[in-house]
Image (cartoon, rainbow over all chains, first blue to last red):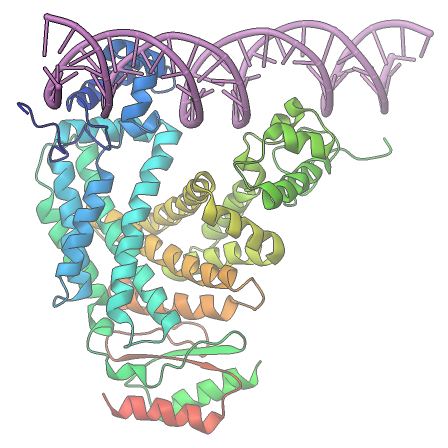
Length: 254
Length: 254
DNA sequence: TTAATGATGGCACTGAGTGCATTGGCGCAC
DNA sequence: GTGCGCCAATGCACTCAGTGCCATCATTAA
């Protein structure tokens, strides 16, 4: 009972590893990064990584589910962290909440700029890794969308809520990604947090006004049924008869 | 010179195939779909597909780059079509232009609802296919972002333009995806174009004011301006007076 | 008929990922 | 100290995707 083998706090490089030597995962990842940098991703076999790390090929797959897993270690834990952050923010404006969440994500990249930039370089050139990255991003986006949808249900018909939640989540994620990419392209040598705040503020401003105060909007927004849906968008300041004329015209035209 | 082997107009099922029998690609795809439905994606080997299609395993890879390629045939040509559409729309509001582009994409799904729904069912359950789908979506998003950025340069500092372009592209794509997913989940048995128009109108409204002086949009769908936007969705079968009553009530309540 | 072209097929190979049985070290009970 | 059991590590064999190369076969031009 000298050394505690149980669950170390999950640093990058270690992941869903079995109980054994906690730094073996890191050793493998380090070996992989070196080889990827030297020979490229496709030019590096798992055998080569294993050999350089001083382990057996089979052991590699005990620590990492696949060859590309060795590049993306900590998204799972980050996602749970993000989830916890979100369920704690029931009072805040939903957009503000997910802005806080993407800040968590960005901070995790800032945690080790060198590795983040290396990952970025690799992902940019290797299609398999790019796809993998995309899948991770999408999981965040889905999480955000679910959260926003949960905060929106009741104030909007279902279809509307899904739409808005998806769009808002996509917008915030896109903003985050733009800031992150800029930072990665620059080599990770400045502090992008202010940029993120600014971008989030802009997104909030864009969505802000139509989103929150419209508890009363639930009344006129009927459930969008299967067929024959008509949608009208207009300024509330528009003359009423003009609005009605437009709607009846569009109804007649079908 | 009896049969013309030259470049058929690229229908789904055929793709970057070599010159030969133009329907071989379709035969392979059909066999693949049947087997995927019967045994699942992972339970189907390329050997089995080839055998069922009556061709050699090696020939399969002449027609499709990979096993999952057989599911996603026509994104390349669609992407070029989208590009052509975009470069033709230099006069329109940029958001409206990419809204037209996603309508093209949606229309391509509507072209064969049965196949689209099958694809969706598969993509939902098989991670490899989901990732592939994501990658395709991302290519559209990048294309849109580039286009919007091009339209925005000069009016904004570069970093701002990139950010806004990315966010707008992501928002429109998310709106499209929400409409598409809804339609696919329902089995593809209604016309989602009105939904797409509505969603695009909403997105345009959200981004409209800060983006562009608003070209006074298409007839009944007014460009949703700064504040006090009302979006009404209702079935065309609903009684007209009921609709008007709801709208005027909601207008009065603001 | 013959030669050339091009699609197709056969074959062997690499490399990722998996299942299974075995080894070997380590702590622990006796 | 010896034996026992646990568990990570390992070795091995296997499946399957994807590729390169060469042979084959049919269609067409000469």
